[in-house]
Image (tube, helix red, strand yellow):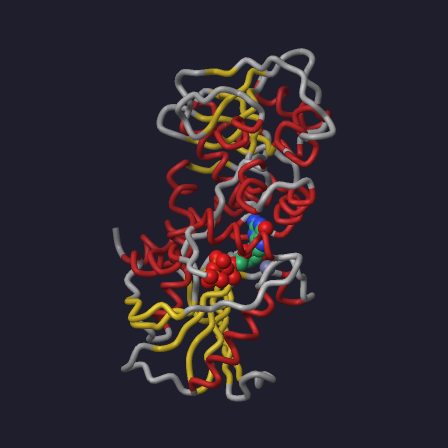
Length: 373
Ligand SMILES: Nc1nc2c(ncn2[C@@H]2O[C@H](COP(=O)(O)OP(=O)(O)OP(=O)(O)O)[C@@H](O)[C@H]2O)c(=O)[nH]1
Ligand SMILES: [Zn+2]
C-alpha cells in the first residue's frame, strides 16, 4: 500500500471509531464487527425504553447486558474468567434496573434483585470491543448487545443509518490517534509562575482529542530536560478542589520548571485518570459513601487507572525531548514513557503537603498504587 493510501485508511478508521463514539453518546446503537461475528450495541447508561425498543427492533433479538469483571464482582456475580461478563436480560429487568446495573452510584440505596444468569461460554470479541468503545467515549463501561449475522451488518448499517466499526480499529484507536498527533498551534503565553513560556497544541489528524505541551524557558535538549506529565483535573486545576493534589502539583511544576531555567509540562486530556469528568464525579459520589479512589473506579467498572502514555511520549519526541528528568511519584508514568521510547534519566519527587480532604487519597495512592511519596 502506498504511503498516502495507508494514511487515508488510518484516517478512515479513526473516523469510524469517532463516529461510533458520538452515536453511542447520543443513545444510538452502533454495529461492532469482528471476524465472522457482529453485535448491535447500545451504551447501558443511555438505555431508556425508546432506545431499548429501537435496539430490539433493529436486531430482532433480546440483547444481553455486558459489564466489566470489576463491575460484576461488585454485583456479586461470580467471575467467568473473561474481562467482560454477560447477563441474560430477564422479563423483570426494566430500563432503570439495567442502568443501575451499570451505575454504581445507586448500589447502596437500591439493593439489586436477582439472581442473574450469566453466559459463561463464547464471549464474542465484538462485545469486549464494544466495552472498550464506550470507555473511549467516557461512558460507563457497560453495553447492551445483540448478535447480528455478519453478512447482514453492512446492509443493516446502510438501511438503518447506523455507524459500523471494526474491532481492530477500536483496539488500535488510542495508538493510531497518538501516532497521528501533530502541532496545530503555538504561541507564547507568559504565566505568573514562568514568564517565558510557549504553548504548543497537538491534535490527531482526525481532529480527535487534543493535548497541550507547555515549554518553559529555553530547555537544553542535549541534557536531560526537567519534565512533568499532568493529567487534566478540572476540579483541582481550575477550581482548587481540596479532594486531590492536582492544582498544587500543576502550579508547583510550573514554578520548578521556571526555577530550573527551562523544561516542559504536558497537559494531557486524560481527566479523571482517563475516565472523564462525569465518571470522576460518579467516583467522588462513591468516595462520599466511604470507598477509596481505587475501589470507586472499580465499582464503576473501570480499572484503577485508564490512562495510556503514548500521546505523551509522541509529543515529547516531536518537541525534541528524548531524555527527561520526570517529576512524578507514579511508577506507571516512568514505565509508560520508557515503553514508548523516552529515556527517564531521573525521577524527581513531586509531593505537596496534604489537607484533611485529600489525606486518604494520597495515602491510598501510596498504599495501593505503589506511588513513591
Ligand atoms: N478517577 C479518579 N481520578 C482522579 C481522582 N482524583 C484525581 N483524579 C485524576 O487523577 C489525575 C491526576 O493525575 P496526576 O496528577 O497525573 O497524578 P498521579 O497519577 O497521581 O501521578 P503524579 O502526580 O505524577 O505522582 C487527574 O486526571 C485527576 O482528574 C479520583 O478520585 N478518581
Ligand atoms: Zn485532581
